[in-house]
Image 1 (cartoon, rainbow, N blue to C red):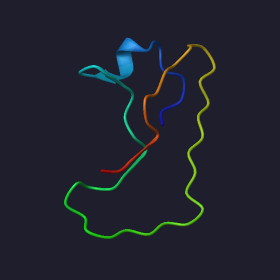
Image 2: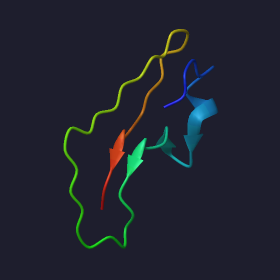
Image 3: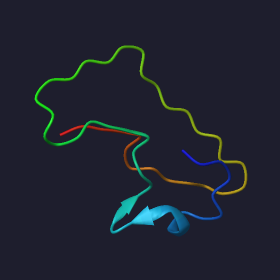
Image 4: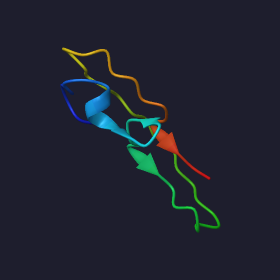
Length: 56
């Protein structure tokens, strides 16, 4: 996740707010992860992120 985004609209694709920091591709058959976490530091703007971790 980027630091200090100027606005919600500056970091949006289509109708989705933000981008996943961790994504497992759609074609992956199996996947394991332990201790995965995402943190954000948004000082100057009220940023909305729909998904920090994305899987199918």
